[in-house]
Image 1 (tube, rainbow, N blue to C red):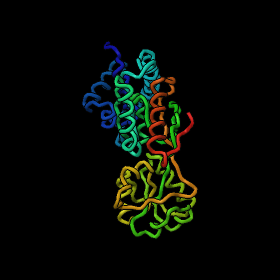
Image 2: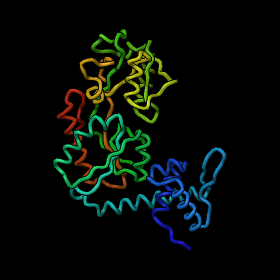
Image 3: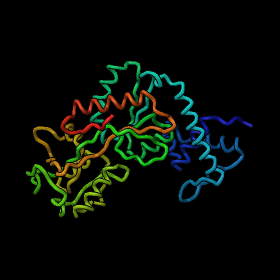
Image 4: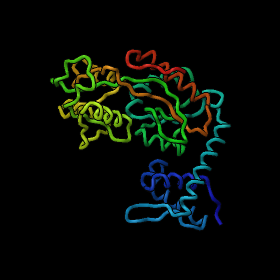
Length: 310
């Protein structure tokens, strides 16, 4: 009988979470045929079917469900074992895989990277963007070491650390009835149509909350995939939206902006933080990275962020 391998366990765990060969292969960074071969080899080793193909997609067999849960436990224990010997437990060296939501990372991480590379040249940061919901699943599955995302993260296996609160502002088109206002309140939006990102983003929930309290209508026919897409829709007069202050500073604050941004009263914010697997413990490298991000935000964006206590 062939030996059971950790690779097979990792591959099956990814497939059991996604129930899609194509998506699991993409997460693992391998080809779909390679994944299929490893899953077939695992089924042969265990002597049982783990996956069934139905017209509606893949489902786990009863044995597959049990083995999927056991596989996740094994991978958590393996990750904890690796962390015990990882140099970053005591110093900032080695490789750190960081996932980042595209509504935060591009506007903050270049400054953080400059600081990290200057202070810790032996630390290599590998950064990958993704939607917050996907990042949390990928983190729990071991594809990232830590993620930078909007909080809260609702996942029992993850630990979070708040870093700062970032202001959100209303974006309207040039010539909009509110374009000349310096501040707005919820009741100013009662006749507006709000655009939002998809439900994988916490900003989706915040737009829905504003609609519920202000009487505004959320455009359910369109959900943006990026802040740039939302801004362009707003500039065309197709609705209004919420934009984070770091994005506004990077992409909107220019001599001839295509949209106007307006502060809320009382101010509206989102909470930004780090998350990592609870089984990782509290590695000093994660805590130090949190300190650096918090300090960069405080020093370089003092007018738009409020650092959280350490």
